[in-house]
Length: 520
Image (cartoon, rainbow, N blue to C red; front, side, top):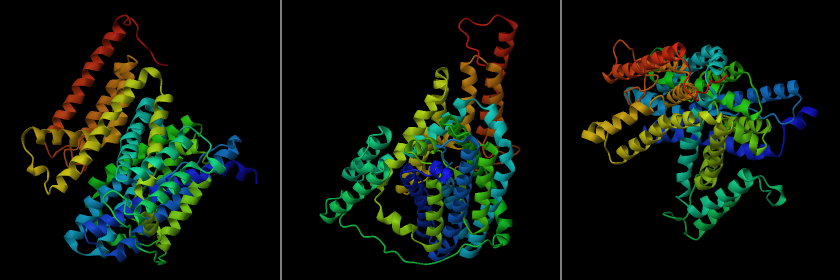
């Protein structure tokens, strides 16, 4: 009973809505892309792919809940917050458009496509389990500005900015919900009846949405119609169905591995973020659970990888313990089995839900600056640049697609801008981390250490881990790069590293410059 009081709190309600809605949206987005854009049969997508993906969330969040209980018991603290786990959004889009959709269009065999997608997820899970043991070393070696700067960039530019656009689709609904969420969660203003802020924001926004709909007052819309709930039980048991698709899955690994690597780097980042917030988890365990959850999803028929979410400080600020991860695990897991996820996503208006994600993004960004030495703020700012390129690249691609165009239709300065944006945005999480770490050492007047990270940048650019010239962001062999720019990028990083090494040699050979800062 003592541990239940420590791990379950009223704040779990707020945290549950944030984590649950994020996961639920990922499942429905994947289903919409595969059935709408590629015309895959609903039976395969809804009753095989989604339930299996939900099982990864179920297992991962329950394991993270157990880790929180174990940490609370070991430390005797009553405020331990579980690490949040969910479905990785970038790879949801990447695998849908780069693996599953093209495989189905080429084979026209939905069952075989499912087997290939399962195989890809299984291989990604095995890869993440293997590299999880390197996580603690990465966390010790990389400066905090690199770890938290990359995560703050994702939080502000992708988690906060993109949902903010949803508010303008229905401003009355969106700003009502935003105001309630901000005053209760950011300013910690107590609402009447001690109602959780996230729940209050969603309820008021949803009520306003359907009230405006009843009077035909929604911008650009009339009465809202949604599909009724249809109960359909599909238990995603472990299976070897992925084995026939493994051979084909190997061909997609150059595209899939960067997504897996990005979540591993993100896992190291979020572990540091949680430690700053007061919950010091073992990095290896966090990454190991991520890999196991992804592997379970693939073996059970899932086609989306699982990963730790970057919202831990925000969920802790909400007052969450481990109840929110347990509740999310059960809601998403049962939703995949019983099929009610699409119903709830269709029921709740995006404008009412978006403010929770906006709060999470702002809270994480604030933490990055609060927990980083003041003289490293510029390194955090630099780490935002690759994420900005990723955001612009997403919007650029959507605009071209809406016009029925592609990059092949561009020319001149516009093509050069598009190409540079793609290069900068591909692998942006790893780029942000390496840049943040590099310039942290630069700001500390340690050019020799900065040069080591620049060499890592050069090596990563030679195989497409960062700055891949391929639109898909896939890896490639450094022996046969897809474009000459690969060699130029590696040479650029190499020249900068060489210049820093010369400066380091000069620093050690002579007196320290006036005002030099030396970090401990």
